[in-house]
Image (cartoon, rainbow, N blue to C red; front, side, top):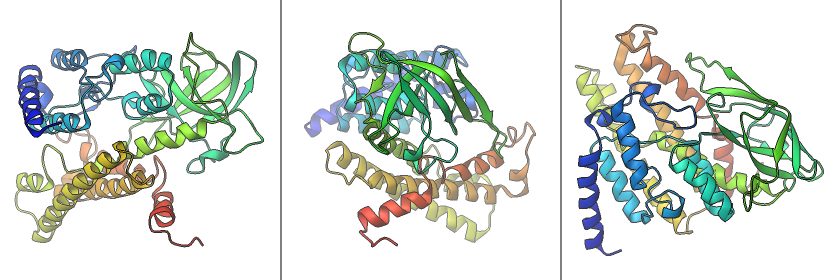
Amino acid sequence: MAETDLESFRAEAREWLEANCPPEMREPVRDEGDVYWGGRNGSFKNDAQKAWFEACRDKGYTVPEWPKPYGGAGLSPAEGKILRQEMARINARPPLSSFGIWMLGPALLHFGTEGQKQKFLNEIARGEIRWCQGYSEPGSGSDLVSMQTYGEDKGDHWIVNGQKIWTSYADEADWIFCLVRTDKENKYQGITFMLFDMANEGVSTKPIKLISGYSPFCETFMDDVMVPKSYGEDIPGYVGEINRGWDVAKYLLGHEREMISATGGGDRASSLGAVSARQGELDPVLRAEMAMFDVDALSFTAMSEKFMDELKANKGHPAQPNMLKYAGTELNKRRHELIMAAGGSRALEWESEETQGGKTARGWLRTKANSIEGGTSEVMLNVISKRILELPGS
């Protein structure tokens, strides 16, 4: 696309955002209610959140780079980048948060049938369905292919039994995309990537309480759950091929790691330098560390943009998401360590209204899971050493 066309799009996007993004949706996210996840039980915190979501949904801006037939705006990668820049410029909140957008959607765009795309992608884009991810199991975290959840073939359906763990927001989700072993003899080519309703008989969840006091993670249990092989014409109950779900799982993991890595980016409403200025006089060494962090975070954002452009053009290295995930994880942990240091003893407060229920401390504790979820940092470094640096194995 010509530079003049992109500048014209930027002007149009800026005008649209000014007209449609309410002032309340340009303020920092303060609590879970400020994030809209959609789904059949979704509710809006206020009229501004509802108006912002509906405006973006109707414009295709909940998933701006998805094709228009699937609920998107059909923007090119260059236009999508401009839209993200313009939203960041006014500190606009995302209109819709969704594992369907970040993880399942890209997998369906790549592996799904036309029927699956028409049904599920449009439901995701319109915020009508909320998904969770059924990957890790007790004893099968980073080594996912050792999973034991099993689907017994019953002709037109499977009967699934097993347990998943660290299933984010499983107690709030409508449907799950789930890795299920369907061939016990083949470790890699014996896994099927299934889709099923969390309301199915035999599915139950149990929240896991973290050291932060929050419970975004759950255990998910499947006891004789019936999973159809089809939900209608050209709408299989699985993605890709039966017993070849590992291909889909690996592709999706790349997008999950990109999502987690984004927590380290520098495109935030306020840099740590700005935060430190509001904190008053701080130790000069701490202020210097904050400035260094801001530089590193901006460098990470630039690297991320480069990697994303390469991946979309099919020129990226398949291990680049591992690099992003590791670097983003370390940056996010570092960010919260510095925020805690700047807050002093007040940052340790846990329950008062003044500290929003210990938001700083709880957020710092939550980052400890970053180096585990989506693949441990040790696994990421092993992949980088073998596949990018080409170092010999032990």
